[in-house]
Length: 486
Image 1: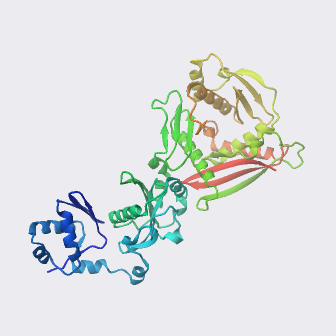
Image 2 (image 1 turned 45 degrees about the horizontal axis):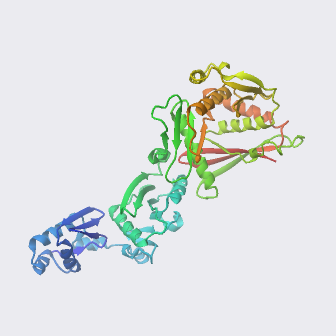
Image 3 (image 1 turned 120 degrees about the horizontal axis):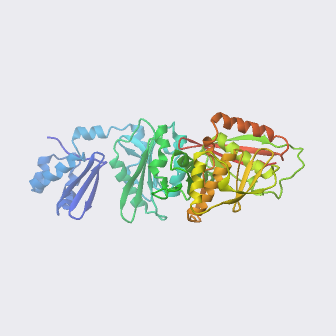
C-alpha cells in the first residue's frame, strides 16, 4: 500500500467551520465543524509512514478520513512515496542556497526561495527590480509610486526573460508577517510561472479587507502588449460622454501623481497619443535620474555669436521651457516657432475679428460656427514676422505658427475651450492640441519647413541650442525639447 505524505508546498488555512487547502493545482475546502481537529490529528502522520487504512484505523472515523484525504488528493496536497521523491529532486546546489517559503517574515524579508523546482527571489520590503540581484523570477511588494517607476522602465526589460510579480501595498508601516503569508499564497496559486518570455503580473493588496486582487498582466517581450499598456491601465478617459462641441480627454493613473487634460476636435488617436505623450513626459521628468529608462540627447545649433542682442530680461523662462511630442519633426518646428516668437521682427499689430479671418479647412469653419452661437465677433490682434510667423493674440493668450491656418485654428480652438468649458482642477495640466501639423502639411513639407527655418536662424538671432531628448517608453518615442540660450 502507498504511504502518504503532505505536499511540503501546500498551504492549509483554517476558518470557522471549514478548512481550506491551497496548492499550485487549485483550492479545496472541507466544510465540517471538526475539520480543523481532524487535520491537527492526521497531519503529523502524513510523513510517509502510514497508508490510508492505517490512518482510518488510528482515528476510527472512516468517512471523515476518506473525505479529508480525498480533498487533499484532489488539489495535489497528498503525495505517495514516488510522487514525494520526484517532488524533492531539486539540484543540490540550488537546494542548499535557497530558503523555504515558511522562513519568509520579519527576520527574512528578502530571500531566494524554492518554488516549483526553481529559485524565486521574494522581497517583502519596498524596492525596485534589479536583474543581477533578483534573477529571472521574483515577487516584489512595493507602493504605488515605486510601481509607476517600474512601469516607466518596462521597455528596457524587453530583452530579458524575467517573470515578475508585483504586489502593490498601501500600508506605510507594513506587517511583514502578513506580506509573507500573501507571498506564499501567491506562489502556491502560480505553480507554473511563465518561462518562455518576460512578463509582469500586478496585484493589489488591501490589508484591511484581506484581499489580493489581480490588476493587469503584460508580456513585455511583445511590443504590441507594451504599447497597449495605457489601455490596460485605463489611462485615458473622455471628460464628457457627449463630446460636443469639442472633444476632451484626461490622462490619470493611480501609479502617477500627474493629471493631464487635452482638448481637440475629435476624440481620436491623434488626441489620445498627444495626451499620452504629454503624460509620460511629465512622469519621465519627475524620474529624470533613473538609469533604468532610455534617453538620448540631440543638439542643433541656432543663432550667431556675433548677434548684438541679449536674451536677458526677455522671456527668460524660455531657457527652461520643455515640451513633449510624439513626433520629432513636429516638436522641432514648434520650438523654432517659439524661438521666432521671442526674437522675430514682428510687424505692427492690427485689430481683427477672428471669426472673419479666412480659413478653408473644415475644422476652422466648424470652430467659427461654434463660437458664433454666443458671439457675433471675436476681437483679436494679429501680427506677422519677417520670418513668416503668424501671431494671434486673443484675450492676452498668444497663438503662433509658421503655418497661418494652424495659428488661426489654435486660436479658435483655445477660445472655444475657454468659453465653453469650466476651469479644471488646479492640479491638472490642461491644454489644446499643439502638434497637429499633419492637418496642414504633408510629411515632406514638414521636414522641409524645419530645414528652411533652422538654416535661416543660424544668423540674425542670439546664439542658442535647440536641445531634443528622446525617451523610449511603452513602445513609444517621447520627444522633449527646449531652447537653451548660450
